Each structure stands twice: as C-alpha cells, then as structure tokens.
Image (tube, rainbow, N blue to C red; front, side, top):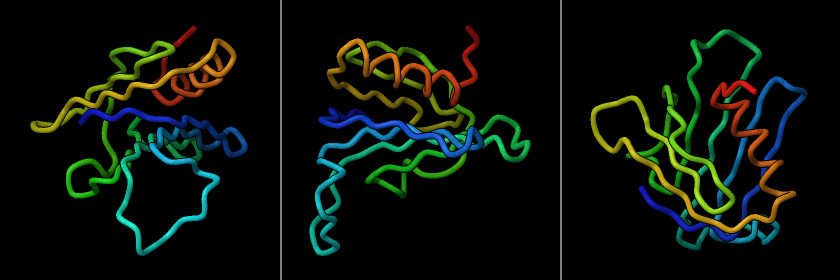
Length: 119
C-alpha cells in the first residue's frame, strides 16, 4: 500500500497506548458518514498488557490492511515512513508526507515507541 498524507498526527494515552495517524484529509473537518472513505493509515500499539509486541493497523482498506500484526520499521524520514507487515501477502506499507524538523521529532519519538526502536 502506498499513500501520500497531507496530515500527520501523534497521540499517547497515559503512556499506555501510542498512535500515529497519516491522513489525506484534515482530521479537524467534520466527518461525513455519507462521503466515500478517504485514504488514511493508523498505527497503534498498547502497553497496558503484554501482547507479544503486536501493533494494530487500520486503513481505508479494512479487508486488506486492518488488524493486529508484528511490524518491522524499514524507514522513517521527514518525508517517508515505510514498514513491513509479518504476513504472506500485502506486506509493504509506504507513506509519504512533508514534516518540518520539530514535527518530525514528535512523530519519530512516537513511531520509535510503537516499533520498539531503542535510543
């Protein structure tokens, strides 16, 4: 899956759950249930219980890209995020975007926590 995100946001919930959202439409806009679903990617990991290190992913294509998986971070830069899903098919996910240095550091911190990157 490839996606170009106009909006990137991060969140943490009491250091128990971390998420990063890549969206093609402004999350502040009102959500119209009758409109077609716009491309997005949500990657989330919870630390409340020992889950064996799996992450939750959700996209606009729930039949192919939704569920709990082991993920491997391949690249994270101010313009690209790529990871591999530990399964047979539809393994690669790539998101492009543009982040300034401050926003990139925020996103990098959260992504590193989600993927268990040390240091």
